[in-house]
Length: 322
Image (cartoon, rainbow, N blue to C red; front, top):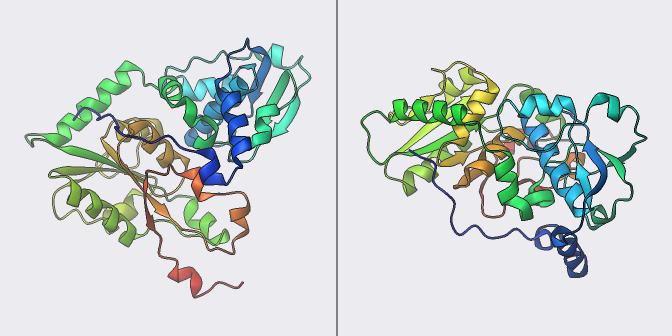
């Protein structure tokens, strides 16, 4: 049941996915690879929950490096991440931070060429950056930053071993079903969340490809999952016996599986990114005329080798007003 390593992962191209001119891509690549002493102090605001904070950490790590400056995290970020991961960025003491005149610099959630030339020795990044387009060229380093403490890994492996029982050659597929506030939020964005049909298709994808898959389901809407996920084949396990558990524990458990089914949200995204196996995600879940697409790009949110299954937008089409 030990986590399989991804093979043949092709390098993501910022230019290809975001239509950046090749000249700008060369500029991006140069900035990402040039060795130079790091100066000043860069930090980032802390907003959102675990998946958002991981994205902010990784984006700061990469953007500070690309601009030749040292990256420092705020105590509240360290408190959230260090209890799970072996993060290494230094912590900025409040007494130091309070005496610095920061330049606040807002970034959107995809890499842009101008982000290679952010001016300032003391910059505080703002916004909600988490896209792989910021840091995927540093993937090995990011994975190292988000390596789990050994006791968390041991606990996850023990849990999976218990699920496996006497079965042989099991392939674990972590399934994260985001519900909670998104049940209300997504319709306001002219979008949907994963339904029963999507989850059935996603699971069947792995059933067709692997002999003995076991689906480990975690969600902030477990009652819905137990009612809508077909477990008649005996290959579905609801983590925590169907009760919503600790988010960090659930995250670690799914991240130690072999492959991932995610729905929407940064929590599921980061599980897929850390696992490194096959990831299936819900695609095209926002109507084309939604203003949310001004700040969200599918190509910046999901790796190109991941497998997207289109959402059923028909409930929205019945009520949508252009």
